[in-house]
Image (cartoon, rainbow, N blue to C red; front, top):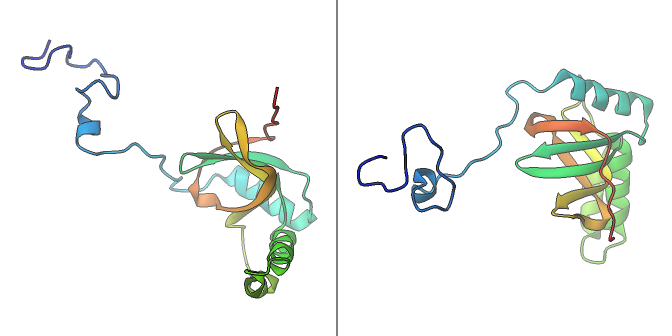
Length: 153
């Protein structure tokens, strides 16, 4: 045992919240670190979605600690859908023009465009009906092919 620190031993992790956790007392937080060099596989998947103009690819990613699951869409399809949603809003219709402009990108995709997607929170997905999310590929820390289904049972 370390002198003056009851219940601690050198080299043995201390559970968070135990009162002896230095990082908690120092106000430090653990966070996920983005890839220094984005994974070529996920870039290839995004490029294939773009070139095939397909929205059938299901993907689940972890980014900044959040888990997002859903289907990928080509950027042009994603922009069009966001524009439609904004156009239908009395308060936000002026912003739809931002998404009407065509994407002018050269080279490999830099973002994933999710539709019918949810952020996993416990046993549920938010929003229930699925949302539209744009995620920078460089911010993805983990991913898997497929999406998670939800059940109220």
